[in-house]
Image 1: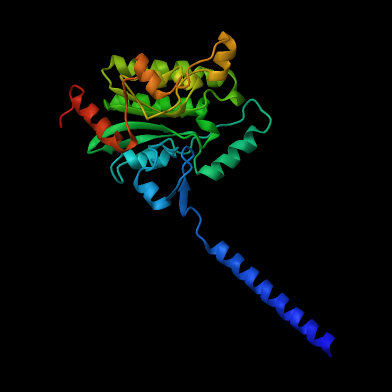
Image 2 (image 1 turned 120 degrees about the horizontal axis):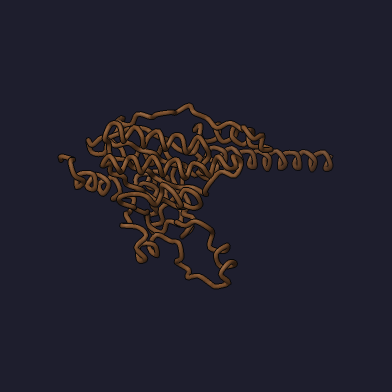
Length: 291
């Protein structure tokens, strides 16, 4: 009888423990995702809504978090003013590079983009402007043939319609899966910018973290005005590659926006919260634009 009572008590305790564990698991699953955002620099948590309202700039340390192309367009352009161009142009694995097709398909599903740049025409405080915004979430913003084509086409549209041009850059460089065709985009985009400049066009280049490789060696550094976000990494080869090549230790701040500003490679560093107004003011200051 005692054994029967003991077993009954054990079963009851086991049931209670399972119910408590199950309840905790349900509670854990019910906590909404993206409730908080962690800063990769100071590692402090901030409510996601607060981070979004602050344009994804950490309120604790001022670090500018990476953002998508569509989020940057949302931040810079007037509401519902942006009209996208060449949305459905896609890269093809013409050289049959192993795994490239699968990687492209996965990134399209994950990002909702067809390529690493979004282009179109929008308004900044009522002023029409041609815009290209690169997205590091798509193959680290690497520049292949389609990226080069889309940027060239928006430059040509700006030339034809006499619009100011903004290119927001972020990239790991040329896309190795496309070989020589990716490197050709450096010359193609630069030539288009030369024609744009010859027609009196005004080009603002915005460098965000990171801007490297073939992008930094072409259209990123050809702006009439070159702006960078705080502490953005900008350079061609990586720091370790350069150190190993020259056999010297480079300064800690090497290739950061503040270092480049000091050396005269860029014109200004602008916080994200001031970016839209700064770009608008620059457009207004440019000749032929009426406020």
